[in-house]
Image (tube, rainbow, N blue to C red; front, side, top):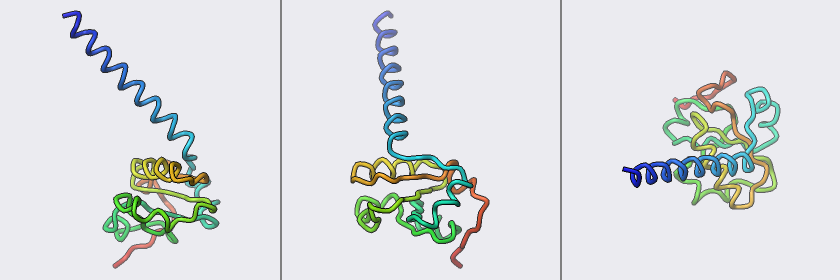
Length: 128
């Protein structure tokens, strides 16, 4: 019985450590911006929507370029490392992962839309 409890405690401890390390790495990699902050800066930056093409076509922030997260490893060189990169996805999961990937590749000016596209109330464009 005691061994089972030690095993469970160890697993929980490892999960907690993993979550803390991941959030620390993410905090160092990307700056979360409110919609107002995002709007102030994205016109002077590279605005990248990392959602899949179907999601992008159903509605995206005006001026955004679609590089789906599933294609980022092959296409990241389309993004200039010397300019700010504004990322967003539906709810921050993929944009956070994209930021971690781009940080590893040497990108330093990384920003993401807090709350993701689902919270966006600004202008959007749809493909018919």
